[in-house]
Length: 432
Ligand SMILES: Cc1cc2nc3c(=O)[nH]c(=O)nc-3n(C[C@H](O)[C@H](O)[C@H](O)COP(=O)(O)OP(=O)(O)OC[C@H]3O[C@@H](n4cnc5c(N)ncnc54)[C@H](O)[C@@H]3O)c2cc1C
Image (cartoon, rainbow, N blue to C red):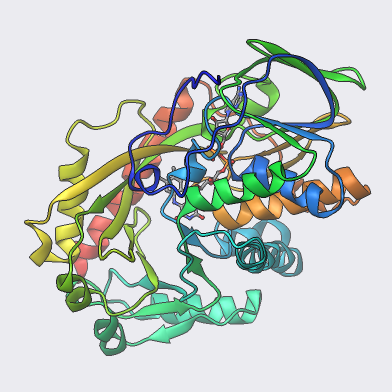
């Protein structure tokens, strides 16, 4: 019998899982060509990428459950881009390379769509785009962004006038928006578990409740130790996200765990259709934006706020509900059925970190709050590198593994977040 170390935290997603199948704990010694640490999207998509290339001698080791981390708790937005904005991509590597990097995530959105269909993964996928709603009155922000995306990234984000936006979202809070058509939203935990089931249908092995406690990675044959077992492997992929702690310092000391929060309201029945008349998911133009989407059972799934502090606010549901009522004042009385937190991993440069430290030691980490598509990108470039020797992962080398600032990192991250929040607040006040 598998002893579960830490089960899924309470969330809407855990409460609506398609099944509760568990994978065994690693016991004793095994060999695998590739060992992947972390059963989140970065680990799973690398494994899936390898499986789809006919390469199945893989072992995934997850300390808790598949999709237990950010991948099974997120807002469910599936859209192109990285945590680092496309504008900052261009300033770092120039237009052409930035566009190529951006389009890796556009292809990732398409691959997620294809996999959900091809493997018949029941994950409530809603292929109806994403809306960026303007929190401010200034329309030039939207027009400039749409123009930039068209000219530099060659993608068409459609401008929505204030009137068009209010016909979709019944809130006085917004003033116009942009519509990104090649975007979707889904049940992230059921997607993760559906992908794991596909991987498990092959020779690849998945272990849950198997925390990796140490790694010996200097030799061509590497060893990965869990509390009860050991895996010898040729390739090691480190994909521990914001939960990696201090495993392999070169990698873990390059990211900071940052918390963010989600809630799901009670089912709203007909009230939902009066407020949200679109199936698209929505986020807004502030640095510290809210994001939300209507669920099939008429709840609103709502997320926002970030914190570099470890402790989850005791009054989290009230805080998020206050944010919700700023957009939909009529929902001030609504009951919150689920509220949860999750940790993202952020590098100081905000770009996804994908690459190799020493021969055979690969990493995919630092996806921040925009990781659903980029983790699929990571899975593809790492699978191409491991299975085929392709070097497309080198596109990510301009960012590398910077120092996370140790104990000062969280302070710096929190201060910068407050600074941007203040800027948003001031802009809002000045417009009023
Ligand atoms: C609340 C929230 C909302 C978000 N919303 C969105 C969104 O709507 N759209 C979007 O694109 N992105 C979103 N993100 C970001 C996105 O979810 C992440 O970037 C992405 O899931 C990261 O995947 P990952 O595999 O790197 O990390 P994780 O999913 O966190 O997986 C890492 C896994 O590694 C395991 N692990 C760590 N250390 C060990 C060890 N020593 N041994 C074994 N296993 C280990 C952990 O248990 C964990 O399961 C959100 C994130 C959060 C937290």
